[in-house]
Length: 374
Image (tube, rainbow, N blue to C red):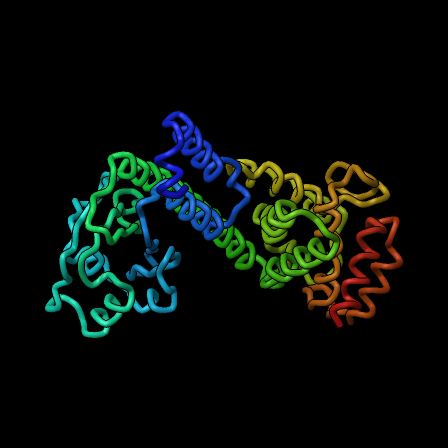
């Protein structure tokens, strides 16, 4: 929005355009990556602050704030500036973290004593060494600064109250976005810690399963991607695959590592592990899809599997994928009751069981994918 447009258009039209710009920036942005979202919002903010001639967005990376977007500045020059939190606000006003505030500061000239010669040189190249007005707002998560949104003008004038309000609105919305992102990452980390603990418990109980979950996960997600499954399906497969045998925690170790053939009674006890898996995992929130995939990975295409005797397309495709790669990894690794088979032998067995134990479409895809990977 240009200065000329702002002066000529009626106020109600300006407000309507501003509202629409804000809506466009934030609505339906869930599919965007973090960087795409921030870029979109950054450009939107400058569209609504027409007096801003240049600007930048700094993001906390580790313990240093680094510029990731700019408007009007040469990015290669701007990237020379990296600040700690203490250095970021040298010469500028900022309250203690905890509330989202907007600040305006006229900088007559940088204090040479407080910056390195390299930074002073960079300021001069950027045009932010003297006589500019900065409008800026820290971006916060849980009371800590994680970013800085700022814009500059060089005509010696102040920003309007509307510009300050827009800056505050965007700072608050971006802070909310970051907060949700951080909390999701923390929740995912907690899930990953739970998963690692469960996998470790299985591996401690049965040394022959050590690394099995990881290999099955890699094979299952690779095959799922090859078959064109959605990102959500692949994510669920990844989690279900690493945890598909967690129910074996409920099976006695003597049975799990028995070197000889299992008795019918012992095999029936082994067949209980999908039910144990379901019982363990269903206590974790948002794990419903993962639970069903893991629970049904021993179902057979012909209906002779367990625990429910499902057949054909009643078996989730995700479970069918894990079933095949689980069998393949089991066949090609040493077990307590036999030595590993070759990959070619395993391929032959899978092919022979296509349409009976295994979903024929998934078997065909697995064999094609393996051939493609060679």
